[in-house]
Image (tube, rainbow, N blue to C red; front, side, top):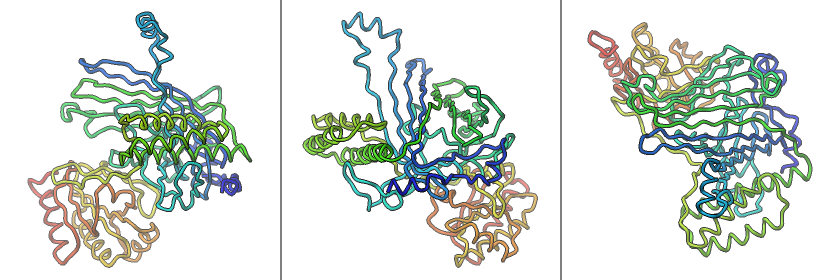
Length: 507
């Protein structure tokens, strides 16, 4: 299987003929080949400013990506995230003198996690999760085309070190991201990240492109309105040659009122890398998959509270694997799992690791701010961000192109668009279909109402039926919603919209 992946080694995530890649001032997506191994090293600093719990913690951070297979427009790889608590030298000396032994030797062991990830042609990262057909057991070989499926994106912790570090991949827009370009990238149920190709810069004497990102909770910059909140800032230096991130800097800050509660800073640099081939690649890939499958197995055993005897028997198998196979870059992850097996076999109650699962968000509630989102327009490549439409009421019409109700729902949307011109925004959100179907229907119906590709948006609104109408006030809060379509639908939506745009309405 891996040999087949190597046959695709010459394929890149972005074609050299792509105008974005050809433009020296455009941020290219990562061009990865099977066998590429990216290695990053840096640190994480976690701080609390609470008066009753002030502290500073430092961790050594290591991130390693081994590209296993490359497809026409994506790359699949094994991602290792390693965090090692760093002993404060100001404390280590006095502690050694008081306790009578070297405290550095008893420092907390590193936490090591291995995930399978998919990086698409625009640099967007999703976790891969096993399918029911995936083989189980240490030493099994995964066929990435059949045994795994795309899962959720990796959520970034807001109050601690990263569990899965993917910040070396910048999600790019559909159009060329030349210096001066700004765009928004969706981030699950959180507000979108505002990215900008900022400027040319230097890293280790070479030219790079500086990309900056900003994400914050609703009202973070208005502490008198929103009592609590958080803000995330990113700075990524990207090689214009192959889209590889050379340096990543991130700060996540939390506040309560005007007081800072704490912050987490992450920074790491690209280390000299290599490309593995032949038997060396096969061994490294086998070890990476073993580490991943071991983590999946351990999570399942801890979740169902398996008896200590089961952990003991499987721990013996892990030890045998370590003895029989040569050590590679992912060996420490297997050793860390082995320690956890031994601890669980002795009766220790261990926490269940974070699993790659999709959490279904709560549906919007009347009176609450509707989830913000970013979606590409149809048929061009511009983006629409919902929050940019605030200042006027807005109607969202979620529908499925080519369904039996889509034409009627779009008829209502088109009529509302004409009726409320200048007073409100109307947006058709197409989901669960190929964008070409949306474009064709738009042309066939001669629509003028703006449409967006909402396949990545439907989950934010917990939709289970189509069409669905949401009416938002000028602040972005949900004022009314309606499921389905009938003869009365257009009248009801217009009535709610006129209530917001007429005299005394919430403009």
